[in-house]
Image 1 (cartoon, one colour):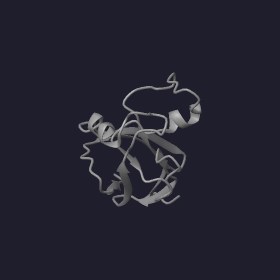
Image 2 (image 1 turned 45 degrees about the vertical axis):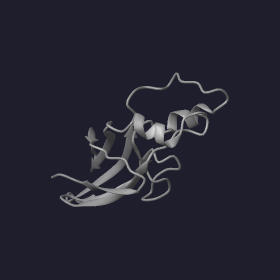
Image 3 (image 1 turned 90 degrees about the vertical axis):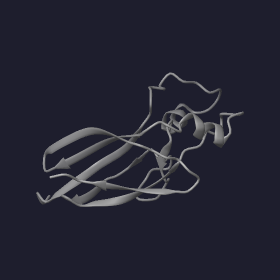
Image 4 (image 1 turned 135 degrees about the vertical axis):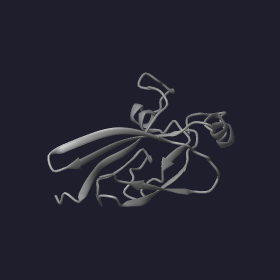
Length: 133
């Protein structure tokens, strides 16, 4: 690894609270835990994002450079009968997008949290991820 580069091991959307004990009928536990409970998620399968839009990575970036990552408004899980997309977005309207970012340079690894203001709308947004020296 070049010292002018940072390996982004993962960037994960963090939820507003722990939902490990949440049960929704017969919905698989993995699906509930991977659902993004917040205003925005990574667009699934774009920019190396997972199927749920929960995380992206790995990726290598030059220090002091960034790159946009595509995000989109979240929606209620299919098991949330009675909750419309508009109701879901209203619930998370003033919530920040919380990210847990894991980076590595050589053998050193850092994990830090970031929160970004979010204005959700029906249009897809791109956020730029920047690395710091």
